[in-house]
Image (cartoon, rainbow, N blue to C red):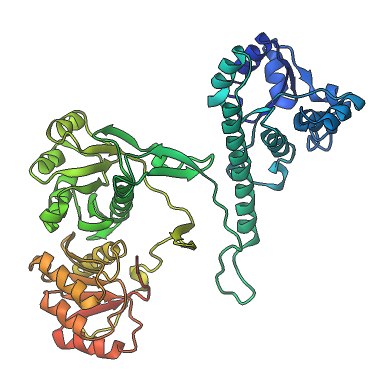
Amino acid sequence: MRALLSVYDKTGIVDLARHLVGLGVDLVSSGGTARAIAEADIPVADVADITGFPAMLGHRVVTLHPRVHGGILADRRDPAHLRDLEANNLDLIDIVVGNLYPFDSDPSIDLIDIGGPTLLRAAAKNHEYVTVLVDPDDYDDVLDELANGGTSPGLRHRLARKAFAHTAAYDAAIATWFNETAGRAAPDDTRQLPETYHLALERAQGLRYGENPHQSGARYRRAGEQGWWDGVEQLAGLDLSYLNIFDADAAWVLANDLAGLQRGGSTVGAAVAIIKHANPCGAAVADDLATAYANAFACDERSAFGGIVACSEVVDLATVEAMEAAAQADVIIAPGYEKGVVDRLKAKRKNTRILTAPRPAARDLTVRQLSDGYLVQETHRFDAGRGDWEVVTDRRPTAGELDDAELAWRVCGHVSSNAIVLARDGVAWGIGAGQQNRVESGQLAATKADGRAKGGACASDAFYPFPDGIDAAAQAGAALVIQPGGSVNDEAVIDAADRHGLAMVFTSERQFRH
C-alpha cells in the first residue's frame, strides 16, 4: 500500500506519517511536507524518485505526471487499466493526503495551485479504491479503519465528498478574486456586479431547528474561512435555533452601528438594541450601558418579552440589575461580561442564551435566495452622513435635533420598510415597521412613542409621497423630519413642514430594508 502526502496545513501530518509507516504503508511526498516527515526520521520517498523528473518551473510541475496520476486513477477491476499499469511499470497509489493554500489570505497568480487540486480530484473520483484526506480531523478515522484491514466504502465516499468541496471552495475563491481584480466598472460607468458569483459553504453549526420546530436548520460559513460568528461563544442557556441567530445578528449589527454615533459632539458611551422578529422594538444610546438598556426596554416593554438584547459594551452589574427588573430575553449578546455577571444572569434567566461576540463584519455583497434563483446586491450601508444632508425648510434644526435625527435615521435603516422612527434624547421611542403604507407606519410609531418623542426627530426610510405623513409627524410631536427626499411632491411636503414649523432634512439616500 502506498500513500502520497502533500499538504499546506501540516497539522498532524508527522503523526499520520508515522502511523502509516507503522501499518506498512510506503510514503511518497515532496517539498515542505517531505522535509517535515524526513526530519522526523520517517522513511519517505520523493515524488521525483517516482516520476524520474525533478520539480520544475519554480515548483509549478511536481506531481503532474502519469506515474502519479496513473497510480491514482486506475480502475482496479478493469483489465485494460491493469495492463496499462504493467506495461508502463506503474505502481498503485492507495491514499492521497493533501490540502490547499488558503487562497483568500494572499491571492495572486503564483498561488493558484494546479497540481494539488488535480491530485485531490483524481483521488476523489476514484474513491472506490483510493482514500483521500483533506482535513486533519479525519486522520484518526482513517488510521482506525486501516488498523482493522482497510478503509470502508462509506468512509471513502464521505472523504471524497469533502475533497470535492475543498477544491470547489478553492476554485470559488480564485474566481471571486478574478472578479475583484477585473473591477466592476462597465463601459458606460454604471455599477455592475460580477458576471458570476461563487459560493462554497460548509456547515459550521448545527441548530435546534429552523424557523419552526418541524424544519431542520444549520449555520453555514464560506468554506475554509472563519467569520465573526465563529468567534461567538455561548456561556449559558438553551441551544441556539435558526431565529435566535437570525435575530441576534440583526441586534448585534444595530447595536454596534449605534455605538459609533455622536451626541453633543462626542461619541456615545454605550448602545443597546432589542430585536423582535428581525426588527428593533427598542434602541437607545447613553453615557452608560445600564441607562441605555433601561431606555431601550422602555421603548416597547411588551414586545421586548422574548426578544434579543444586544449590548455594545461589557455588561456590568448595574446593567444586570436593570435586566432583572425587565422582561425575559431569549438571547443576550455582548462583547463580554464583568466577573459574576454571567452567574447572576443564569440564576435569574435559566433559559436565556448568553453570548459573547467580536465586533461584526460584513462582506461587500449579500445574497438572498428566491424560490428559483438568487438576488445579489452590495451590502447595506449608510453612505450619506450629516455633511451630505440638506435642510429644506425655513426653520433650521438645532444641534440637539440633529443628534436625534441621526439616531432616528440610523435605526430607521435597520427597520423593515415601510419604516418610521420617532427619537428623542438618545432613545428611539416609537418604531413603525413593515406596513404597506407610510402613514400607518407613522401611526404605529406615534402610538408606541406615546408622546415621549415630543420635540425630537421623525425619520422615514423613503420619501414622503404626500403631505399627510408630515401632518402625522407633527401630530406625534416631532420637531424635525429626516427623509431621503426625491418625490414629485417634495414642494408640497416642504410646504407642509413649514406650516407646522418643523425643520426638515433631506439625506438624498434611501434606506429601504426588506
